[in-house]
Image (tube, rainbow, N blue to C red; front, top):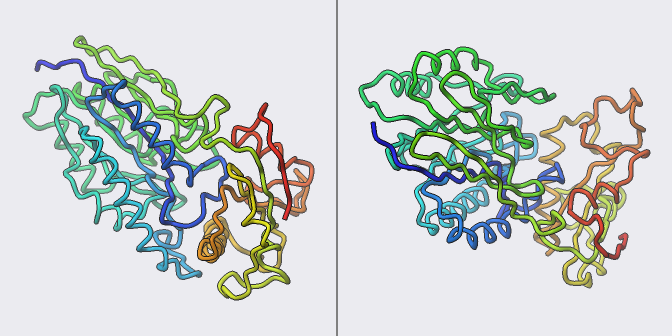
Length: 390
């Protein structure tokens, strides 16, 4: 089968929030700045000249209660905002006028995703059959390929279509990722065995693991994990396949010179207790207080929130519940005109203290510098900026 050279640009793990208030609970994921990053990407398209865009999951950072089962904080209130953000992304992708495929990731809400992105999960570009697989997580957050998608894979490897294939998925088939959170398919050995019985799949692209990987061959297939757009240096990957099938990859960084998504000249720190004095409930909008000084912050300011996980109102909450609780706070703040650029959990327990072992690993400990973390996470190292606390 004759193929032409093809240029693919992979965008993965956007974790976008626009209409959805708030930001990811992991501050390195610059959810609120992804729109500006995509503006930069759009400006680069005439230079990049891609034939195809592979958008490999985690388009949004959707509230957990919408799709994780447990929903103690009635997160349905965010449903319309989730749909609005999917529609905003689809309108942007369609406007670019470049063929693309996308699929949901573990931070997407699959039902609302499917209601917006309803295109067939397969296309043909320059002689390559490009197939997107819609997979999900199972117990213990371990990814798996369900029956219907597994049958699609089996059929694509055994039908009469001789065209070489490029496979897209959010989760990682290969290489093996060493991380506390599961990134590889629980059934990856079986899936890789199916690929090994066919010589059709030339390239397999994944996301999910934000640091990415180098291109890793296994049998006839080259596997690659793209780095996350939402984290500095906010990369997209350009993948060129020449007429002989040789693959070359390079990154294009959407960050500015200091790895910043949006330049900042001032950092304003505000604690959760400032907004909720005396332990007020974030579901009581009348109890939320907004300091008048926040309305007078200079242009270009970053507004960074902190939340002490030792507060009694947060006792016993797991990771998803903590994130949803803070998203409800983000919602009330947004209604008062306050949008946090980042939120950091803090802990009173030093690193290594067994009493704090059950807390999320992202919590800032007393022996760690919050401002140093903000500098690194927001690309402020070496930049001049002022600070204030509220």
